[in-house]
Image 1 (cartoon, one colour):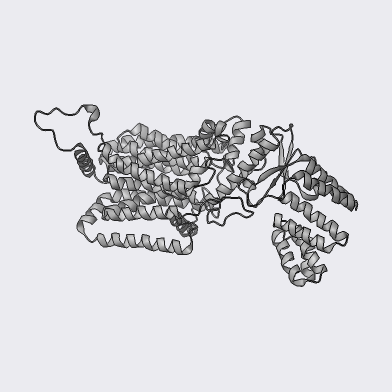
Image 2 (cartoon, helix red, strand yellow):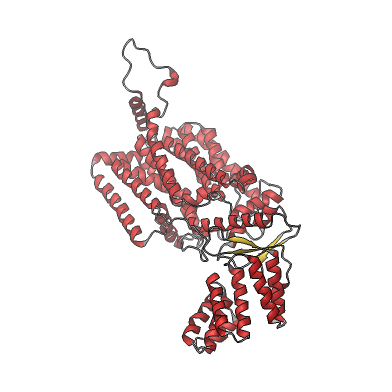
Length: 625
């Protein structure tokens, strides 16, 4: 940060500009309540208000159509613990890793009881946290720079593609809270309030491991603010108390069973740092998953800004401005580097939102550097960031069979797909099976790929029904034929709400038909399967796809080849992920002597189920293996 003299003069100039000319002799001064506040008066807040409104508008546009706030995945670890266990401050709240009592225990105690039924409240809460973060960063930046540049700095974390996940996902609070408390630490230290600065630093550390870096921030900023050793020592004492409290708490949590992912705490794998910083830079610039040409264009534009800044630095005045801000720039770079380096321990599980808290340091450093060189360059950086956010891949409107291909394994499009699936399941069970007996068996038919993580095994269903004896799992193919099922779900492809409950009568008719098929009583089995189709009511879905496949097998047994071929095509149209339908299609083609049709069918079967024994046998017979 700049020296006290620089800071004081900058703030004084801001107050003078806001206050206007001195009063004329004989004219009374305005009442105290109407005088300009410390940070330059009401008019200067036009800048953060305007950029904040633009940032929120862009962020919400990038989230359009997503079910914001819907709990999925890790949320159900915490909700399950909240519903069925005693909350303990020194555990990891149902998951094996990390001790984060503020962003887990405290957060879910405050929100968990209404989160499922009012997810919009989570989105509003996270918008409030982002708004508070914007205000704190802006107020802190005003100690060094004018309102336009301070607003541009505060704009950075808001107009962020990874912020879409943090806005929409309840567990995103584990990243929003440490960022907010770290910003509060900086603000309180600049205000000269050491105990509130220490408390804010402790809160940041208790929210997330990256928040620990807020603790050494206190004495460092105190030194650059005052240049006085005694003042630095007083702030250092507050930081030391915060650090000791966090270390003591974490050691107690570790003794109680809290773990760290494999490798954490060991030597930093330096060979992996270039890769993690490359991922981080792409994420920080909002460039993940953009088309290659768009990404290259935006990279060139960012490079042009940097080249322009270097060219401007030839001027002595620009170099002097950058030199005055050099401590703040260096400190921000250090914040980004340290937080991002820790992400090597979670590789290859890369997610851009994990680098969001460190990215704030990157944003501060780049915006300060460009703005100190020439304020239009900082404006250009803001514009590029906004454009990249607006071009980010939109969330899926329906749940496809396959997840979107994205760099982050838990990206915003993938999160939205999980939220649509999980919320659709909850609503389908609420409407189709509002009450279930204790120990009920809830089963599901073929599901879209990679969605079961959203339910965290049986935890989601147990939370919905408030029943830890409820079991949740797949129908299980052959073993499901004789299984008692209290509620059966299926998922229809390419629907926004894909989950539906199969009527018990339809399921019972199907189970009886399959038993009869095993006994070679094909006529009665075919009648029961036709009856199951009629009870089901709808004309698509994996349940009907399986029925169509089995009726195709019956028709083939009867020698009705054309009927069998029509039925198996119908099965594949309803569920292209049904491996046995592709297998039967290959058998039909082989029976007709149509090798060209049999080969792609059997290859598709093996792509879905590589261990399919009959598929491998047919492939070998066709000369493929």
